[in-house]
Length: 351
Image (cartoon, rainbow, N blue to C red; front, side, top):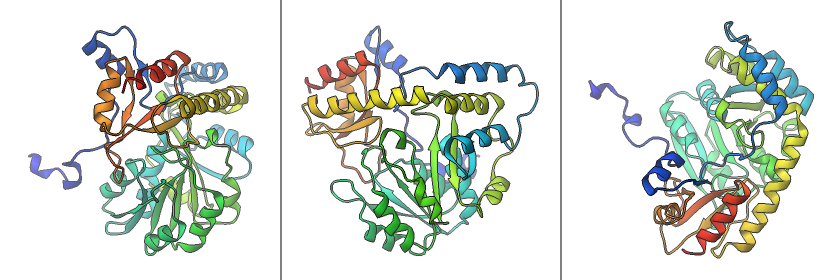
């Protein structure tokens, strides 16, 4: 019966980082520096935990299908925008594709980048066109616009995963004015960048800005994504979405996280300090980053070889081999706890 499986799911899917527990057991290590998944090492805001625990007592009932309390909190936090939610930004991406893309439609993606855009588009039957970035991983707006002509949907990540590079708002204006479809701007790491892309929403009705609660808000385990969308799209997105997309605990925990600005400010300040130290003290070339990670050129090693060598010293980083369009001599290193970061700086010198 295996022959019935669709062709797009027969090849390799999303590539996950190896689990710390697996590596610790294999190598007999008591603790592992977990720097592969761009997680926030800080626990969630106490207010987020409090509201989540309160919501746990109500899970015998279905959640509010409109997640009205979370949407109200998002509006108070950011202003009068239209919002949609999903199970992680992955869920938002998947639903946007399901809403807009018919089998055979073109989808353009700026690469190298987060692999799920392509996986989700191909699963919907789209024809994907990958648009290479410049040698320094910046986006050439004119090249991207030319590739996007005739594409119903396009994806661009800033700060970009895994390179950490940012696309200036002015370049995005050139893109938004030149394309004839919708641009999905992935802002998963934007809180760490100091760049504000929200003013673009006031000028362009073909822009979606995706966000997540997994990074700066320390809620990766709850899978909470949301997006700023144009008003015309919101009702159609709701029809295409899976019923009861977010559960009660997730939506209430997210509300608490949004209400605690101190947690975010402290996290961003700490990441900025360590990001600078990684650039300054790492003996290998580090790409300038606006995210909570950096990308390191480990040549002449491959990414996989560097991962294994660092794992022997108790440090897990992410090989960038699975990122299409990126040469196989890079690793991505998250900013973790202080001891984890120090251990990485010590271990990487041995490469």
